[in-house]
Image (cartoon, rainbow, N blue to C red; front, top):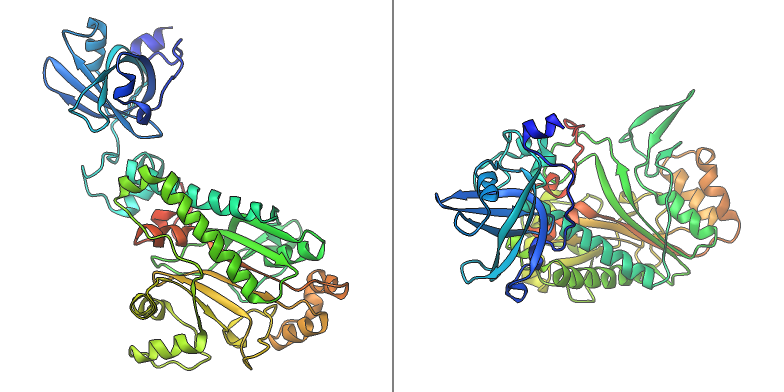
Length: 452
């Protein structure tokens, strides 16, 4: 067709990709391979040209010496532009000039699709682009190897945490994201028109994951978006984030929940360090797998520690980000760890469904997990006794009649249970030392950004 002749593209070809870039090494010397990807870097040395081909796994060098390749291949190489989609057929040649120990000498280069002039660079270190501009062109920004690596690491963190739960009899559920009432109260709800009535985007799957235990599922988890209509504009807040929730029945106390999470995260971190080693190397990150059990301190002690550092808080004051930062500095010095459970929060600071403490008056059987100076998890034991649950809802100034769909099932033999919600993006940013949560979010949503 004239269109393809005019543009120099061949979108349909007979080749079938045989290898990814990261599979090319000296052991394949002499073997013919087919690779597909983008022209990441082009170096023109006159009679020899170098193409760094990038695919979803990494990069490989394609060396194009004029005397060793067909004339058509050399001619095509002179027309290539950054981010052109190509298929390369060639022979693997061992060499000490590249880190992988091998390069490709092409016998055919097919242009699959051309690229216009890029609005941002996707080559590491080529230019310094501000975050807002990068997010405006997020799809191109994600092609950048270091950005791409963040989300492959995040994928591994989640998949191994998921695998651990499933090996411990948890099943995945999918709860509604359109709800009639707030899960945790407050005004931080996105209101939507639901036919002829009001509805809200879910702040949390809390009520529904608890109800699934009352329905007899035993142990459940969900990995899904949640929505908070908070008008923050900080490095640690976004308005839609991924919450990794689990809930477990027949517990003997909140310690069962903390023990499950610490074992889950230990497994996830250990396996991610192994299976995402290449991506961690791209980012220059080497992290310590947290040892179990994690350190536990009571909320009262946390208040004491931040006050020793210059704050002036009472036991009913909440720990703000500055307090978490202080604790992030204190914990490694004092306890030799940056992964710490803070337990027994005051009743005033916890939702109505949180079990009051059996031993610490005015406190709750609840916890936050802090990692490198940031809260990444909130959890606890839930109230399973109907009368106590209604009493606590009234104490929080909620009308129990508005929550009958949630409260009524507790009349019929609810098991003791507990669980947590873990922020996937926060865990990722803390693990990798990322300064802004938007960089650990695939397509961020905040008060100023609704696209792309």
